[in-house]
Amino acid sequence: MYQKNMLIFSVETSCDETSVCIMKEDKTILSHIVYSQEIHKKYGGVVPELASRAHLEILQNITKKSLKESGIKLNKIDLFCATCGPGLIGGLLIGSTFTKSLAIGNNKPFVPINHLEAHLLSPFYNNKISFPHISLLLTGGHTQIYFLSNINQIKLIGESVDDAAGEAFDKVAKILGLQYPGGKEIEIRAINGYEKKFILPKPMIDKNNFNFSFSGLKTSVNLITKKNNLNDTFVNDMAASFQKTISDIICIKIKKIVKKLLQDNINISSLSVVGGVANNKKINDELLNALRNYNISLLKPPKFMLTDNAAMIAWTCISKYSTIKGDINFKPNPRLTI
Ligand code: KG4
Ligand code: ZN
Image (cartoon, rainbow, N blue to C red; front, side, top):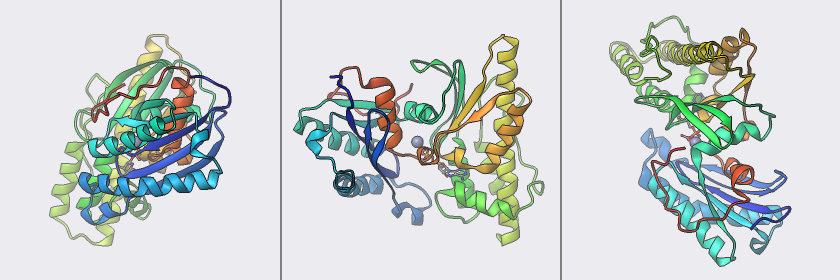
């Protein structure tokens, strides 16, 4: 199926972003549209059924729009790809079925893409990364740490045993009466808050592994909030204290990993942070500080590849899968792993 200067059409629908991208094999983006569904705001979280219906409606419109703005005819696309998991099954089915039909209609291959792998490969778009490499994946559904020997050998070395970091941000925002998605809202409120105001728990930091637990942190915020007035000062202080605590937990675990690698004589020169939560400035600043002493640089994807997007799906297809056969029969899997 390989030919030079291929044109890739990609689709992302695993949660509440509906996104399409047309990318050239040399990674030039001809069109990239990300539509963040607004409908979930009033429910304080993603409603899967509504997300599926919205994907169905939006996908056809943004596909037409992206073909128009790129000036590309559908029959000129060489390869079609879509997120096939993990994620919400309704969205995955809609995105993959839609994309498979385009592939069949145009007699071109369909390539299934793993959403987590796409987040992990996103910093390779704008950085030269040497191996071995550590990647910290912080999304709404996952908090995981991977050891990359190369892009085909990716090993999970730690993860959250309960809530993901993004989920914790979203749930705490809801407790504090802030809008969904909560990460950005907490970050804004934290600017005017006092981060030492509340001492919150840091579960599992003394455990001799690289796993996380965030659900106790959320429960603690809930208990304190119930005993207080939800005024601006309280919300700002709690947002700042929560954000500081979650940054501390992440940095403590990352330092543990770096120390273990040094003990084992494994040298890494960089660590990447990916996923929606990687937008958070406090987490970035604390990670930079934590890594500085070890001479390890912190890498990130371009900003448009942090939150869910179809560009990282096309990029993953180009980086890893453009030379292998497509798989039109691949069944979307909500629990797909790497
Ligand atoms: O990677 P992503 O777009 O979707 C998943 O794959 O889950 O991540 C979404 C998550 C949400 O939980 C959102 O609240 C969080 O990323 N997020 C943030 C920030 N911006 C988005 N969390 C903390 N600070 C932010 N600035
Ligand atoms: Zn994601």
